Length: 355
Image (cartoon, rainbow, N blue to C red; front, side, top):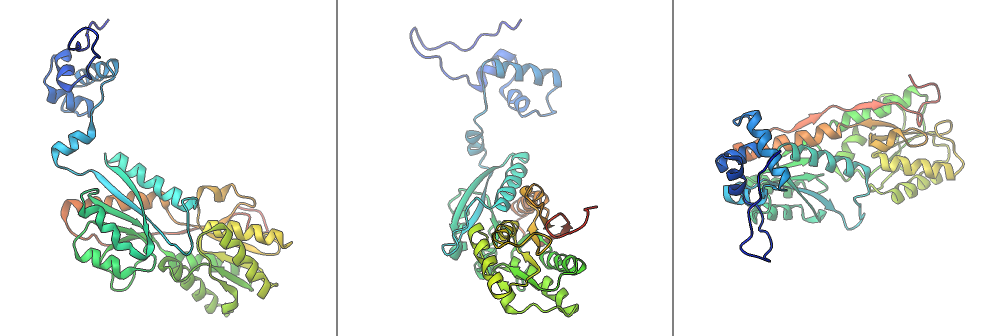
């Protein structure tokens, strides 16, 4: 039985004060520095001592004030994760890709004992993200997407700000990006649809965004090499919103009623397109095959199960964090990293049995 007693109050009727590290050290018969190491599970303290101190801490509901500890150390362990907000499209956090990426970043930062500060900024003013660093609110910034302002990101990089961007590799780029091989992903989608015998193929997506532009580029290259036309009327621009995807699919069907396949630049758009196709009386995949991009968690459970180009969202979050922390530690821009993509064939594009 542990007979340790908590610190007493200053007098009768007064509230018991919060236990301090020195109190816990006195109870355990060790130095405060040993308590700090034991609660951090440091192997510099023996396992027996760690377990004894951790048991006492639980007994008296003692927790380390990590924010105060970091202030005393002078080390900023907060990373800003910026999700741009485009006024025209009003893309929301409901996008399953954003959910997956933010979750993977949160996991990677937590594993490295960093906190995440989630921020939205105007997509027209990406350089506003620099204020997080300038004001000392964050040690560095991870930006999800380049949007349309590659020049602003270059200017931030020239200032030497710790910045890593999820996006495509672009000409003249002076900042670090981590992203999937978007061009290859588009090629994989086109090759699959051609192998399925599809020839009247459409595309959904906003090619004004660098990543989408690369997906479209790879897609169009393969179709051209196989002498399959991709006229402008089969390209419907749409932001990453379900409602926009539905309307874009309806517009495609109006100008191309014989459409037999569509490649959507995101899974959310692909799911919305399937809904619009059903409303028009088309069967998926019998009449129209649909391929998405991302492989969000819902894709495997959607009906029909969604064929998609998988970009490694979990690996992407981990790689973004590692690249940024290396930059913070060494003060140098890290080389950009391109992750592999993979075609995941499911029911929405394949009429036979799935192997």
